[in-house]
Structures are given as C-alpha cells and as structure tokens.
Length: 403
Ligand code: EZ4
Ligand code: CO
Image 1 (cartoon, protein in one colour):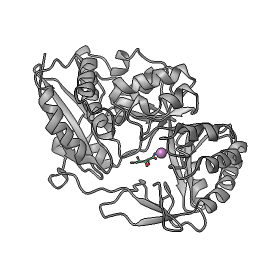
Image 2 (cartoon, protein in one colour):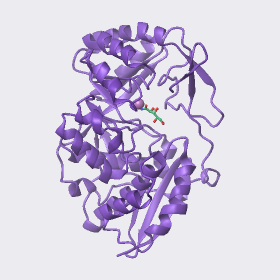
Image 3 (cartoon, protein in one colour):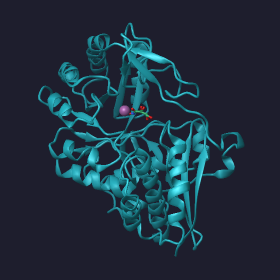
Image 4 (cartoon, rainbow, N blue to C red):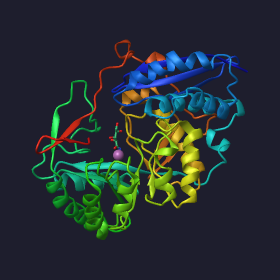
C-alpha cells in the first residue's frame, strides 16, 4: 500500500481549521488536525509546499519512520509550525493504521487503562452569582472537574470570562488591546475560590488558568493563597521558557502546577518533567508532533510523577480531540482532559463518534480515530479561512503583557 494523495483542507465553520487528509492506493483515508490558531495558513503552506510532495508513494504503515523523516529531514527542527505540520501527518497515519487493522486507535496504543476520559469544563461569569450558576450547570451535567475564571473588579476584560454561550477570544479584526492589573487580580481571586468551595464542597475538582500573566513570585503568592481551596491545578502561572520560574513557585506552594498548551516538543518540557517542577503536562496532539511524539512526552512524564492534562480548546478541531481521547484512554498517567464543546457548525463539518456522558468523554469504537471531515459541509465562503487574530493585553502603564 502507498500514499497516493494528501490534501490540505482549510475551512471556517465558526472558526478556522486546517485539516490534512491522506489517501492510499487501497482507497483508505486518514485525517489529521493541522490547526495553529492565529497562524493557520503558515502550517497550510508548510504542508502543501514542503511536506505533501514527500508523502506521495510512501508506505503509510511506517509511522515512526515518517515522523523521523519529517523531523530530522527538515534540518530545521521543532517550532510550532513545523511540529503542527508533522502532527497532522502523524495523526492521519494513526487513523489509517487503525482502519487497516480494523481497530480503534487506543487498541493499537496498548488498549484501555480506564473506562472513560475525565474531562473538565469552563465555568465563568461576569459576576460571582453568574459564576456560581455556571459552575452549578456543569455539576448538574455530571462534570467532576471545572475550570474557574472570574471577573475582577476594576478590570474590564478578563481571559476566559464571557456572556456568550461559546467562549471565543479571537476576532477577525485587529484585536482591541485590553488592560491588565496584577494587583486587582491577586487581591480578588482567593475570595472567588473560597465562595466556590463553600458552595460546592470538597469533592469537585477546581482548576484555574492564569494564562501566563504573572511573575514567579506573584504566582507563588497566588498558589499559596489558594492552598485552602485545594485546586487540582493552577495553569500557566508564568511562561515556561525559563524552567527555573517553576522551581521558584514550587518552593513556596503545594498548589499543583500545569503547563504546556504552547509546547511543541519534548525539549520544551524535558527539564520541567525530569526535575518534577510541574504536576500536569498540557501538551496536545496537534501542537506537539502528533500521537507518536505526545506519547513520548507522556511516557517521560510517567517516570516523574507528572500526569497528563491535554489542551482541548475550541481552536483545536474535533480531529485533534478524537486523537487525544485515544491516547488519554491508553496512557497510565492520564490526569484530566480539557473539553470545550465545539459550535454546532464545527461538529457538522467534522462528524465524530466521541461522546460526553456523566463527566467522561468516550472515544469512538470504530476503526481508526472515529472522525472525518465532510467536505460537502464546508461552505464556499469559508473554504479559504478568515482572518482570525488572538487578543492582546497591556499593563496599566501601557507595557506589553501576555494574553
Ligand atoms: O487560550 O486555545 O486552556 N485553554 C486555553 C485556551 C487558549 C487558546 C489559544 O489559542 O488557555 O483558551
Ligand atoms: Co490555558
């Protein structure tokens, strides 16, 4: 069997997605997510111009060899664009291998380690009452873990807080710049968690995403102030380019730390994991080199008491979510899976067999990943994608802050 075609499909059912579809001489097809939010067309061009010509005629069964060929053969290693392109090929080849074997991909990864994938939902609110009712909605729907993002007095825009049904921070326009105040934030957040714990008791797992806004010592203070409320994790307290930042936070707090949604290689987290500076690694299939490479990261993590917590925002397509679920089911050190349901128009373009039930996601039992792209459902007006830009933040004095 050989690869006869590979097509890059750009579409925008509510937001932009890039998908690679590989076809074989036996008439099988496999899909991989190639979406790099805000930089979508860079990956589409990398695939079309540099990767697709190399795939034609190759044996689709040779997943590891193809990964090595694209990683080492490029000479220029790593980076989000390269690793997202490699991820798309790798994911499509795992989908194909499952179809060749007649098995769901998790069976090829060693079989089930658990009956379902525990997910967390995103609760938020522009007031404390709105937040509490948002949390209650998740509890009513069976969620065992909820991420809490709260409005902060005197800050008008907060990451993760919206009145819309589906949170969407990106926009087609050049985004407005929002103002951030660390002082207001640090003063307010502990009281939010006090209230949520009081209302929902000790068993509900609570998480919080700082979105890289703090310095290590500020994050240490936040972690310490949240200890009474026993968070499952504090996410992205500081950027992770400097692993020592996490050591500093660790020296001051027992609040567990999660990081990794922007990681694209094992070399982004090798030291964080080896020195046990984090508790959860949040790398994903689509941005960290596909199932082959993410499995390598998760296996390293397993040696060092680090659990998984893959990114699962709506700017990763249902193809990525399907692939993530197969790996989540198989690895021994799974922690939690982020889950933001996609817009209905996205689900229509990406028919998938995974389903949510009572706090868990369940992977499809069909051969492969159990997901496809329905090209007939892509509207002509959306077939080239749209300008889609991430938000921008500044501190009160006008200097640049992380989103
Ligand atoms: O900001 O996916 O934990 N989830 C997140 C997401 C990310 C976006 C970036 O494109 O932090 O909302
Ligand atoms: Co995050």
